[in-house]
Length: 277
Ligand code: FES
Image 1 (cartoon, rainbow, N blue to C red):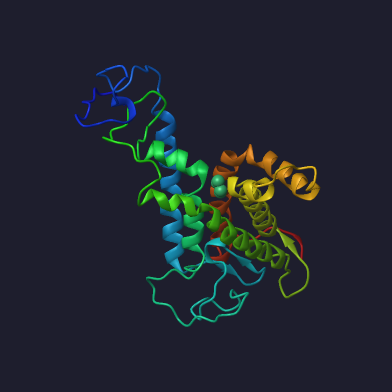
Image 2 (cartoon, rainbow, N blue to C red):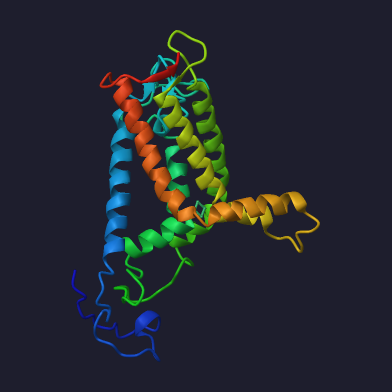
């Protein structure tokens, strides 16, 4: 990818073209492969979005009745259109047309939680929005308004999406609990149980490592000494928070892995190796 020269917008007063900044015609003076991280980010996020969209609309192979495995993309399944046994919380919603995903109640919030995440913002502002694409690489936009105007002002709602994500994590935990199920009933553990449980734990780690969660835990306090419980929680959340980027990518991978594994078992492509039951 070449660093093509850019023409400074005549009216620009912000960013790299603002008055007082060195007038450099080249888009960047960097000679390293600065474009690799944004490219990898686009490929990773794009792959996840395409996969999740296809699977969400597929309405097939999302539930394994023998072992009570439910893919997170369909949880909770609240419609009468859900396959028998997969509606853990009942089916208060009637039949849905094919163009509405069965997980429609949860998918928008999961998407909004991730899209407004501080880490993902950094990733796609660079990789997709080119604002800027990398350090010391000029962005193509004429001016910078940050997150003060629509649509980016919506990013400020991230703290509210966190609460919804926490509820979804509870539901995923319930899904993991009921996956300890043997064929014919009773207690059982299979490879699917381990995958679903690991995914739920990692989703908790990602959710709790959220910057909004850290603020909820320790923000607006004048001193920690009078709030030992919140201080303890804040230190734990802060430790997780240092790995937020890693957890963001890891959970994208475990979501796909969990769904893909359940799809293979549900469709009869593979059988679930059983440890117990
Ligand atoms: Fe990433 Fe909240 S900052 S989930």
